[in-house]
Image 1 (cartoon, rainbow, N blue to C red):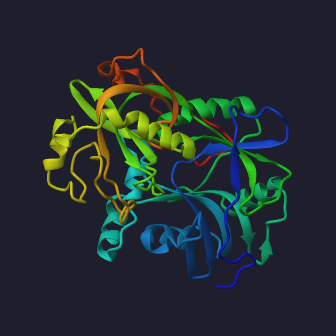
Image 2 (image 1 turned 90 degrees about the vertical axis):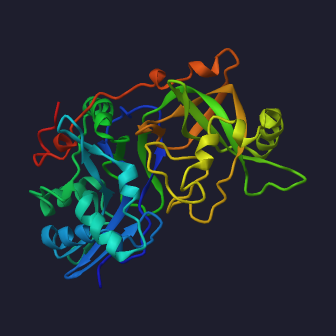
Image 3 (image 1 turned 180 degrees about the vertical axis):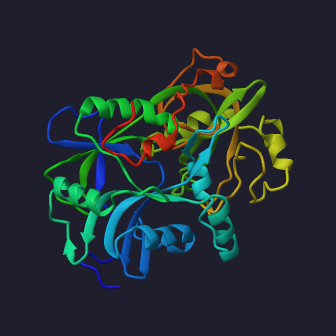
Length: 375
């Protein structure tokens, strides 16, 4: 492989903003919820690289085939790998948990998943085309060349839609969440491509929920002399059953020590805990239990080797957290500690309090005609 831009390349990054920017000179696009991926194609050679430059090629043979069939012979793209699934109403939406399952060491499993849960690739920036590097060119030029090079894509490779209208971008921010998208990204039209620099702006969904603190894990730097909190295990009630909904982490060292001491009086035996029954189920020693809610303490391909044991806590404390959105019955990302809620009864913390995005068909977002944005 010999291209004007060669791997490894770290992709351009984004800083967070609370709202869609309204200043001029910006291009807006949907924020995809998948694996960031740089595509390098030189004739019959294709490499797929992750955000941290690790190879993804072997896990997505169908994307390699699509790149060879649909893209120019010599090109370097920045984009996202995603998996979409059909909903009961016939619409499609992104499914990040299904995408995670695509990373598997067994070649036979990779081949099977490529057939049963095929991935797609959506391009949103151009780094090189033919013999030319586009890194130093402003985004407006990169986008124009990208539209010309990828005209007419109809999947599995797609070109993301864009707009310079902040009002339309705000509509996308609201509407596209129903298809599983993360928010909106804004790029300065006059900015070059800057690897590993936060040149872009991302606006993500943010909500709050009152959850039950049901367990805690020690931090990796914890010692017997100075135990530190690593994360809080959170729960929500579904009827009479307390479901594991995610974790809250990211504390200062001082706060980790304070929280560990503060929560020690709630520590209990697992047999007395609402999640005690899970400890008896097959798979709790490292497998994945076949039910819709991942059992705390079980391993996955993403946590292999990590100590996922936890200290069960009596579910008596309520915490308000910030989160972006749900993936099935769980928080998609780590929730942020906001404040204690001593006024809330733990049993009142259920799924009914959560906002649900109005459904939206991903196929409309991936429509071929990008000059006619969906309303």
